[in-house]
Amino acid sequence: ALLFTDEDVQALRRSKPILADQTDAILDVWYGFVAATPELVHFFSDARTGKPDGAYLAAVRKRFALWILDTADARLDQRWLDWQYEIAQRHNRLRKN
Image (cartoon, rainbow, N blue to C red; front, side, top):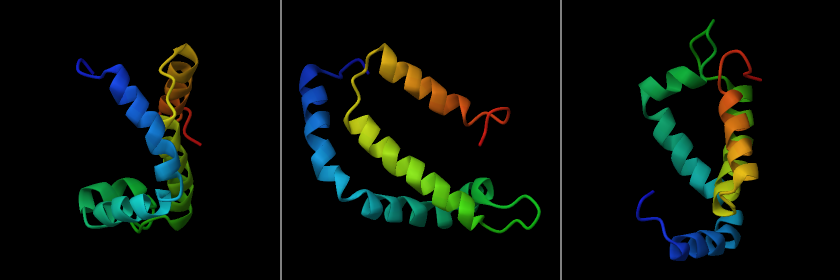
């Protein structure tokens, strides 16, 4: 964060249109990594069966695609920070889903 400059912000903004039509490819790589790592698969699995939960994985995929574009378009102001906080709260067991 210390070395993050205005040039970095500009580059991040330019990345959004580049990333917009590539989120599926990015997520394919990420899902491949998760699928190959049992310690991570655990967190995307049905607690009763221990098998990956397809519906949950699909929902996560949509949110992660949005996160990629949100990050590229980050305004780094209070509104953006509030949204990041909301997303984090949704990952807490008391507010999840």
